[in-house]
Image 1 (cartoon, rainbow, N blue to C red):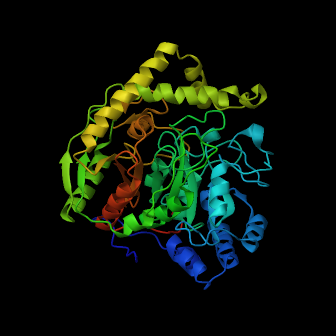
Image 2: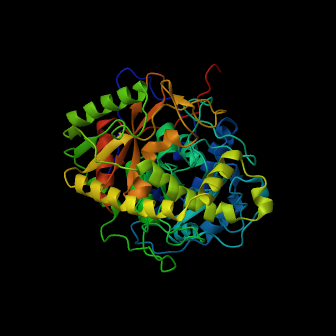
Image 3: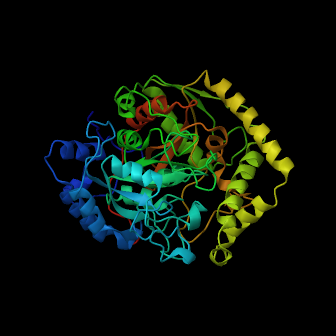
Amino acid sequence: MTETVSPPSPGAKASPAFSGPDLCALSAHEAVSLLRRGEIAPDALIAAAMTRIDQVEPAVNALPTLCRARAEATAAALDGPRDHPGWLAGLPLAIKDLAEVSGVRSTFGTRGMTAHVPESSSPIVTRIEERGGIVLAKSNTPEFGAGANTFNDVFGFTRNPWDTTRNAGGSSGGAAAALATGEIWLAHGSDLAGSLRTPAAYCGVVGFRPSPGMVPGAPAHSRFHTEAVQGPMARSVLDCALFLDAMAGFDPAEPLSYPAPDAPYQEAVTRADGRIRIAFSPDLDGLAPVSQEMEAHLRAALSRIEAAGATVEETCPPLPDLDRTYRTLRGMLWASGPGRADPKLQRNFKQTLRENIDYGRALTITDVLDAQQARSRLFDFVQSFMTGFDVLACPVVGLMPGPVEEEYPREIDGLPLTDYIAWLRFSYLSPVTGLPSVSVPVGLSPEGLPVGLQLIGQPRGEAALLAAARAVEMACGGPLGPIDPVTPGS
């Protein structure tokens, strides 16, 4: 399938130039096709990526840890199921610094682990390498992934490539920025409160949150946990489907794991049809505040999607107690994970991470029971609602990216936000109900910043969701990038 890049949204600025190596401008599936045919070697892609990293890292700080020698050694010993639909054939990629890579510094963005070099890799890294991926770098993340602005005391801030004075999103902000600038072709991420989706929206790439159990990577301390998942990020929906094919499949070490489907996800993307049924809610029935600017961008995008054949109805399922339920489930994870780390490690935690842990520790058994009952009701409401639609569309996040130095916004169009996750309420529905979701670029704002639309799919409906995402991408002129970093005033 050949992808074409259409002009940006009417009235928007054109995309910035790209001055990196020609190989870095290739899509992931184009690069993999060349690798599979033997028309290019992994070492050539590694060299191109390193050239691009040297060019742009001073501006964006997306990939602070590199492992070129390890990547070249992995490429030399490349082996695996070459007929597998997710076979990456030696494609260099990035792993988020919340997953361990053997022999590579893995800090989790916290000062107490600056010298941590694991002997073995996390299950998701092993899976990716078994299927031909070459780990070239670790991408930056906030401390233990807590927060939607990517910064930490180890490596500092990651900056938005479309405007380096702005927030790149988080917690997979390094991954998204590296994709947008062409440093890498695919990037691994993870998602608890939009950590795959928010940075994808802010950096103009695709971030896909799969159903729990689809991709290995459950926390070692909580094998039956379903709210945090691993997933793929890429510059296009087809590339994202390729990476999901590489990640997906049964892992006997994880109790919630289940097999990948018989048909590759990439096939679903190639069959994308614009005649999709979309339920749209700009604020999830009043749950989540959205700026007038963001709502206007998304309504304009939905008009283009509708003109391409989709049916759009403004409606929303009932979402009782979603905010409280999500916060309870999230608090349990933080208290049982980082909250049980060595006290010497916890001593250096940032304030907002400590607040997350304290919230979890203060929960009562009644809180836990209420959350479990509420999430079941929410799933029933949403599952019944979704029988009438292919996807539920809503903002990824309620406002455009703010200053990189601002940890989180305090208000949206004058409406005060109560705490540091209140601006992420659009991300809560997927982790609570287990439904897959994706952030898709739908054009550029008049200021030249990417705008993302969130699509939420049906239970274990990854294939249909990817097809819908591709239909949206085509209607809105995507994919975007890669680009050179934009520094206003320079």
